[in-house]
Image 1 (spheres, rainbow, N blue to C red):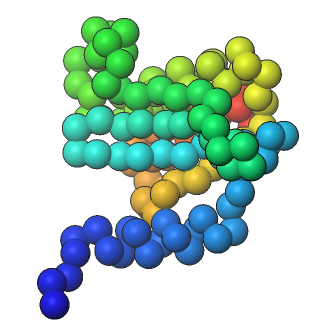
Image 2: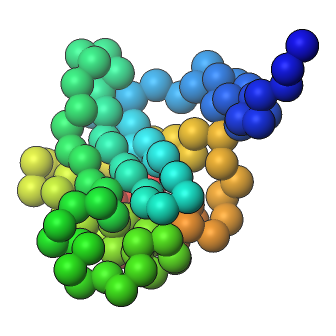
Length: 120
């Protein structure tokens, strides 16, 4: 039987998602981190809709950022997702780190979102 490389993160992700639910009053801010980019979404799990999204893959961010793989890019994505959420009237969110350690790029994204005005 082959062991998958991501199985540990997937197990942690499922364990976390048992406890975290996004509601219309307090949606879920989820993070996906690839080797090259970082993505963030604000999701209402009750309705099953994405309310806001941002990533380091977007052309406007890629022009400003010399590198899309570092903490600075993650912080910028957090700031953008925070601004987009506040524009839609979302002030409080639940942070879902998707099984990643709260360290490095994931922590930088959270700091950027907090600086933009999101509470979690």
